[in-house]
Length: 346
Image (cartoon, rainbow, N blue to C red; front, top):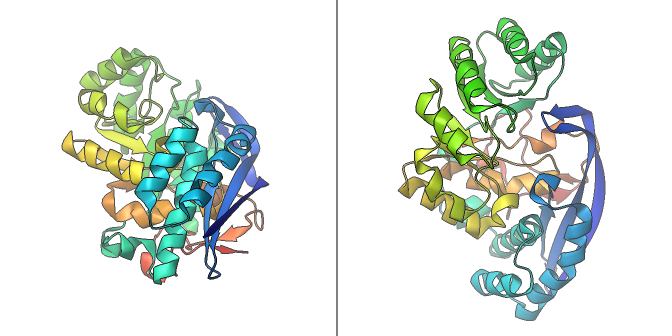
């Protein structure tokens, strides 16, 4: 027998976080808890994005139906059946389904006394470091934030771009942290020709790849960039679900998957396999949110080429009601995890 509940949390960010689409100072998430009658509890967290048509309100609206399906099945190890039942009552709302999925995987592994990565048979030695994201700011402040992150131990930075001062910011960061690895994310802000031009000087500045340079509704533009840019191209907003993966095989080098886009752990693993079958490299990303929304991704990290799982690191001190693996310097040491995802209430 299972009992499922949820609660909403408004989490303050350490600093205002700006990307090309806007700025935020807090995020609202919805934490899902699934308990069995032996006192074990699994925790997941829905991190909705308005970019994909979800909010905390939409998540809260569909969770009662999703959690009723969980309780009807009543067995956290019957993940395939629960997944089918949830799809029968809620077809869309992937962030809501992801929150439930993570809670169930956490509970199932906890009942067996195993961390998720061991239950899934993954090798902790093959876990990439996470990048640390620096939002849009003036060049001097961007460089200061990048230098502070590197001083804390982050060797890999992701810079948000998408304004007419992109080059100044990247040059300022490269001067401040000459040895850091840098990736950039335009969040759909550039035209195809602009992306090709910018990729040339980004390459000169040692940037590794550019993420989502053009709008997701312009697949021809993405292919234009892929065919002509000197840098590898990663697709994020262009890759929402498993079904999007095959079409990206000739338009991108990397796909950025997220649990909250795919709808849960099992579907994300299917998308990873599809990407591999089509010769794509794979990154696992996240939304800004609680450790409860990041932890399952950390346990999947050995499957991936790149990870961007810094969402909880962007929160203000003490804002997160949950604790997970220590990612404060970018390292993901799965051997430090307790059973399940390793998440605990603060």
